[in-house]
Image (cartoon, rainbow, N blue to C red; front, side, top):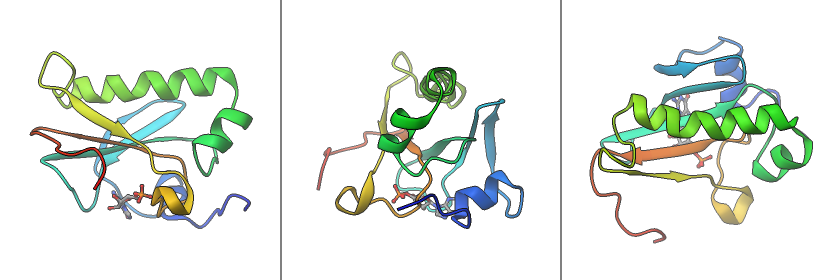
Length: 120
Ligand code: 5GP
């Protein structure tokens, strides 16, 4: 499957629909999930057009990959859920069996309370 330019996160990146922004730089955007599953539920997405983690690691530049993975703990710090502030879960759903709904790579950051069982 090729990248769908009309997915909701592509629209957020183009500014066509709003988001509650947490952090942005040249490579990534982070915003609050519209339907939070925990007290804190944020999303971190790369600005490049990658549908999932497999696509990203195969096709992104090393700098994009580095900046993306650095952004996740950075956002956790901004949200005060870092490893020294209670901790959090970073999770990415990949493809149909992984439960991915939006086909633009994203990591969820869950925190602010005990996140619970890893898989239900
Ligand atoms: P997935 O199931 O693909 O891993 O997660 C997609 C996430 O995107 C869901 O947690 C869902 O609530 C969130 N989401 C879907 N549409 C929007 C939107 O328009 N804005 C924001 N901020 N989050 C969205």
